[in-house]
Image 1 (cartoon, rainbow, N blue to C red):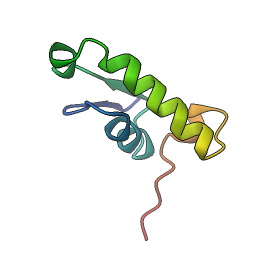
Image 2 (image 1 turned 180 degrees about the vertical axis):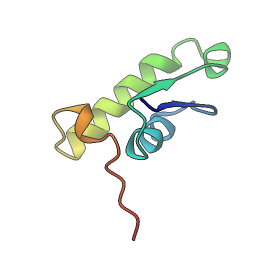
Image 3 (image 1 turned 45 degrees about the vertical axis):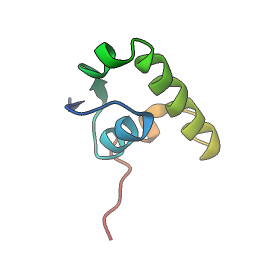
Image 4 (image 1 turned 60 degrees about the horizontal axis):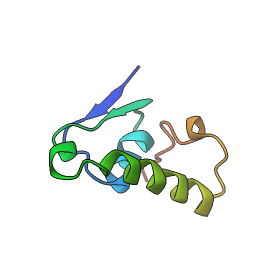
Length: 67
């Protein structure tokens, strides 16, 4: 499995890693700045999935297409 880590502090960061192929992400230093950051990231991912009508996060893993 690919794990995305390094610089993840927003839902957008996490989604970029997931779309690039990460099946898991790790949030580190951002937790020291904002202890609620993980909850905010999860909520942001859920919002993204709802807006894009994605029902299962595994459908996002590796879904990025280069053109």
